[in-house]
Image (cartoon, rainbow, N blue to C red; front, side, top):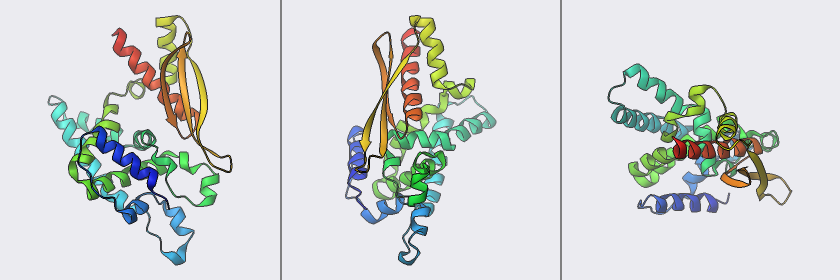
Length: 241
């Protein structure tokens, strides 16, 4: 398994956050990026998969999120903090974080599940995200985990779409009509394409009145559009509120 792209993205993450990083443990990284379906397809080889490291990542995530919420919301009750914590650690939130660093493109899956679109499933992405958190902790200490959670998971504690029960595409459409008197337009392109022609990632660019508001990359068009809509909606809200 070639872990070069995963290591490059990890190194980039550390550079972005001014953290100290060391040598990657390739065997551990392969374990983190291996789904149990892939390991089951090669029973004689006894390939380690990410279930055990995911267990560690889950515990680390709970601790970091709980500590951040306790410090940032000193007047909220335990019940209110628990609701926020549950939202932050649920599958769709973790899947979104995994997509932010292209984690889904590196996961090893059984070929049948690969063809069935499992690479795009929230459950698979969320498990990989928790395993990735454990990898950061075991390789690069606590600060790296806190930085990852703070950058890719914790910002969703005030998720407007979740609070209103709407998608960001719907919210952006309402906001664009109100602010610009026009509807948003989405333009997609393939970013990563296998030799077989299978598209691994898409880029979605959202425009209003021919002006680019945001762009995002994800494992399918729907997720790319939703993430681009989220970025655009958030930007407009900050500008006009």
